[in-house]
Image 1 (cartoon, rainbow, N blue to C red):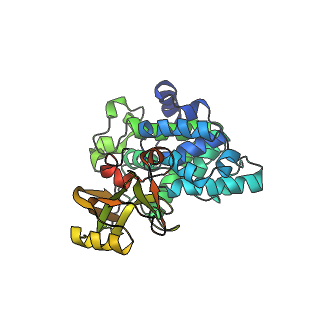
Image 2: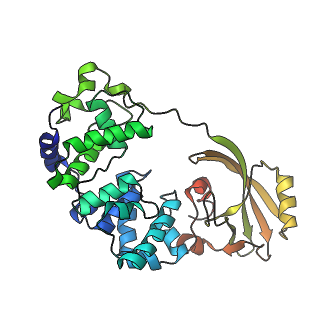
Image 3: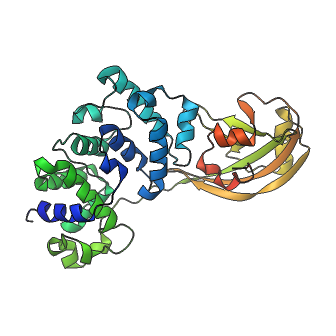
Length: 347
């Protein structure tokens, strides 16, 4: 395989998307963008990126941010462990590095929430270090380029692909080269469909194109089956048109976030819900069924049913608060798992 870098970089300089974290590739900006873009499309993440930076323009501001505000800024992106790790890392950076990310791959890799790829992206793009940044896009490009049937989710295969990536990397343009590979995978050598080979600067070198196997690659391990779990959701509204919110435990699924009152692992009837509410000191004055909904986490699928319940006036049970519609909009963070019920909550 001849050196791919010249053709790849020429294509990248002509065709790259103009993105704010490319226009200003400071370490904080690249770091934030890479964390946001995990599990999220660029077009969906950009408004959050701009809003987040407007509120928290630097690492010390991120480190000092109050938790509820931090969650609210992230609301809608999901996978909230990302932003919690972002803040943990920011506090370490303030304590150990004076509020600036270190220009060292291993030091970056040691921070919470920063893996091999993110450390490589920051180190190469922001600091110009000659290190790899191998994400799913890059693995797909190299799987097709070499017509390699290796299972890219296996660590040994990923290491072999990373070595190939580095064989072609020009040390003086490591950041541009890494971005060019990511961009090629995002725009041309695309997932979930036929690659746009006629637009690819590496088409003449691509062994999978020559063999007609591009659509079959890359190979991945079969995903583990998700556990199906019934969940009963209750939108309890009091006489002042406030809704009851319950805070989740500090660890585990949706850790520390707010949610409507719910019972996991149970599909309750209206009568059972009223009995549960009465045990919490809430009188069931009217009850209507909610539409069924589901939400898929990485390892669990919630199958939700539920009820809208009027409960009159009462103190909030332990671990719960009453929240007005305005507070729901501005203060409390409701995860995307409850998207089907947000209109009912005035969101």
